[in-house]
Amino acid sequence: MNKDKKMTFSEIEKYLLRKGLKNQIDYSIAVNIEVVEFNINGYYFCSVGKYTDNYFGLFEQHHGAQISEDRKEYITDGELWQYKVYGSLKRALNFALKCKVNNKLPNKALRIW
Image (tube, rainbow, N blue to C red; front, side, top):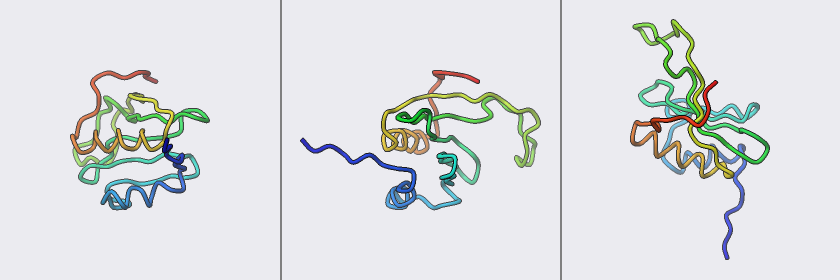
């Protein structure tokens, strides 16, 4: 039986670079708060972050927010929608990458704040 080693936040950058993504263009990492933000065409798409000690979630900040015409600021804030929770950082990242490639997040959220 070959079990995958658990990925840590310090290993994310190498993993995403191997997938062909570019730092600060396709994604940005905030290691201190354990969050990865994914972008499409330079604009925020979704995030993967630590949910609890052993779980990682895929979420979208500002769901339903109104954005200025120049797309540089939020006119109204929005909600935080959590779509999936995984017991593996790598699985959460892979699901986010699949959503990014398809340019589509799930229709329903698990939790809304």
